[in-house]
Image (cartoon, rainbow, N blue to C red; front, side):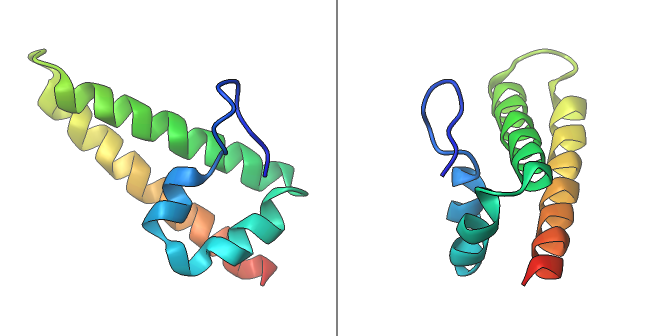
Length: 86
């Protein structure tokens, strides 16, 4: 599986959340630039959401809601994309 700069496998968060798609994600992942990009976006969004969950900023609640929605949208997009590859 492709790794990011910290050598953590990309799409790990998605595979952990959707274990039933693990085999498909791993099969498609290594040879699909679009899936790689979507997984990078998903993990960046998850990191941003974690940041805002820990933040005490007056904007934190609003940002948490935005990043939660974006994460849900990315997950849906990835699942739909994977399903077209099965």
